[in-house]
Amino acid sequence: MKRLILYIQVLLLIAGIVFLYAFAQHKNQQHNIKEIEVEFVENQHTFLSVEMVNKLLIQSETNLLNKQKTLINLHQVEQEVRKNKMIENAELFITPSGKLKASITQRVPVARLNNGIKAYYLDRQGVAMPLSANYSTRVPLVTGVINREMENEVFFLIQKLDQNEFYKKQIIGIHRKINGDYLLNTRIGRHKVLLGNLDNVDNKLKKLQVFYKKEWESDNLKKYKLINLKFNHQVVCSK
Image (cartoon, rainbow, N blue to C red; front, side, top):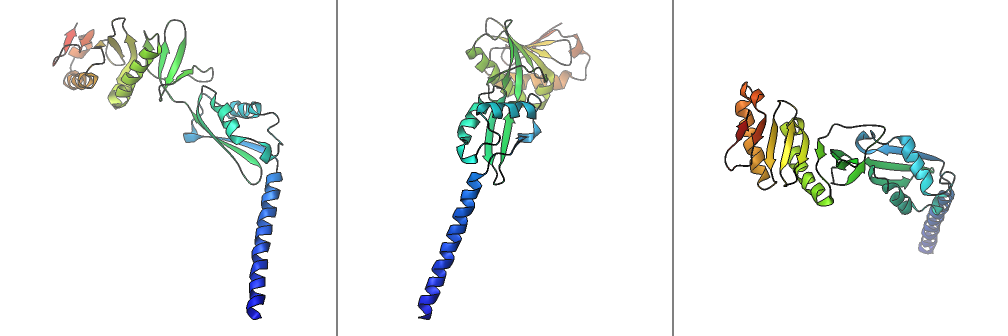
């Protein structure tokens, strides 16, 4: 008899817990969105502002504020926000208290392209993004690129340059010539670097760095107008 009573008590306790959980879940689902909070990953929000993201969130679905949580399709809202060309990623979730939190990753430019018709950025994923009226970042200026295939080429070169801290600071401009050769503009010195095409680009950049180490502290580097890397196993300089 005691076992039966204990068994019944355990069942009642479990039923009570299930009821309370279901009730809490039901009440939680009835909450409306009372607040929107935007945070930027790595605190990157030079091109975007909190106000701009708030506007995107509100525009993505009618009456997002004060809307019942269960009626909001978070996945759909995320997809709408990600359509903005300044945004690399957006993740949304709703807190139990009814706050909609948005974690935004802004696109990070690695180059600025100008093809004579329009100017735009390439981001760290090789995706084109528009210029911003809010902010302009210091990245290499690229000219002579007129199609997507050339964009892929120059993005490959930018990745190579970004792997080296010296080149990240020294190379401020890239021009793709009609014949496929690349001409690099430098920050320090009056010279340009003729890289040639992108065949054996790793070896060419290593060769250039060795040359720089030898000539950096001398006056000769200031006299050069062109450093030519197109020839195998040698660096040809023009004054």
